[in-house]
Image (tube, rainbow, N blue to C red; front, side):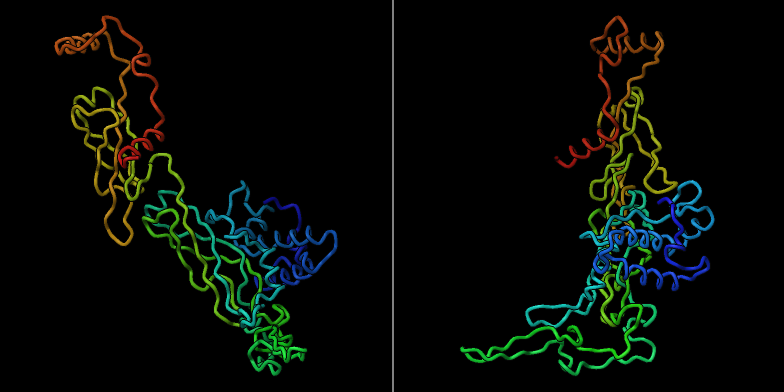
Length: 393
């Protein structure tokens, strides 16, 4: 994000303003500029500027970078170290948050009571395979309707009182009776006094307008367990949409997506990797030292004499951790046999003599290795193909 404007000037706050002052200024500006309430031609563009300013000044690291370097991402464009998070499920953003804020979020139809509890929200968190193996704590940021700081979520200003609505007697609905030629017709509708909540406030909070919640740029830490799988969801209770006037908040549902790895192909809790072994090592047998998925982990892999190309060598206990257990899956090494291309004439003569004694077909002339064996497939493709063959795919 490039800092082309003065974010403090956009929000109308001093450079030493605290977090609460910045949030108050943001809400005040955004409420007047949001396209739902402002028809000015430049309202949408100004609303975006206010959002950009708040997204920087409400984040401690970005604000520090901006104050020091004039750029939220720091001197070399480095971010604040936050996790890789996609958009909220369903496309929620600050614009949508404000639309819900203006609507109150309490309306209900068909004679039902107004919804005052907050809704669940969801995000997708992407982690590396190494992070999924060892478990990791990620800090994520997202936008939500959070409890109002100024009224502690009650919706009432200092000295204000919340009382039961006298018109609907706390039901949130009013009954209308009409006389028709067919008799009396009775209908229910939302109470216009309390807007369906059943409660009224004599002095509502100016910041939240009596809702008890305001748009907020939230920061939360997510503990990703070791062995997590793509598609698995983690729940952070109470960090979804805040309820109206202190009612229950929804939950934040974090869907995990594990990125593909360059070295390993995951199948369940097993890990596949391709390792090069020379033809001579494969014939005689050897021991490989393979770097494991965990940091600093080295796995000893014994290649048996007479090993064949694409043969699987399984080492138990060096795959992905199994959640809820100290056990781990297996590391499966797929052998990729490489024919030496730097043998001397004496070496070739010795090999020809051995091959001739076994009745093998041997040429008297040195042939191109590539012509004999063809080009080798890529390592990632070999691992994926091998893991598919192992699982009958």
